[in-house]
Length: 146
Image (cartoon, rainbow, N blue to C red):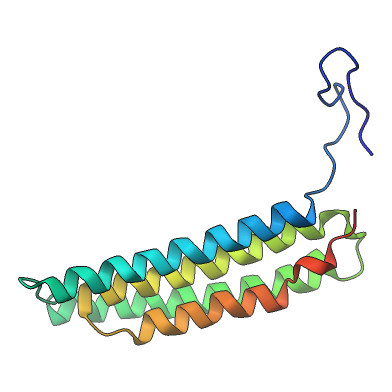
């Protein structure tokens, strides 16, 4: 446990804060997922409201190529985080690796949401949501020990 300054109840200078609690990590996961789901709901609302038209095909083609690059980098990043962040090292940094892994998953899902917003095709969004949920499985909350 980190040393505290008795006058303020704050961590003493030079001490490290305690690792993220399991409850805090659960709240972070829910917030990440809800943000992506609300983005998708907003996109659906905008498209169903009328007056919406998809972006030009050439823009979507370029965006699709960027999406493929994002997916490749995200998959490699999750693999590296899983191997280096959780394997062989003390579990103290496992919460940090989990949060970073979930953020990578959220980035892919939000990219899918943007593609869905611009194109009207939900496949990128659904796959991004599945990737986000996969990062929740790859980096479970139970791995972190207090």
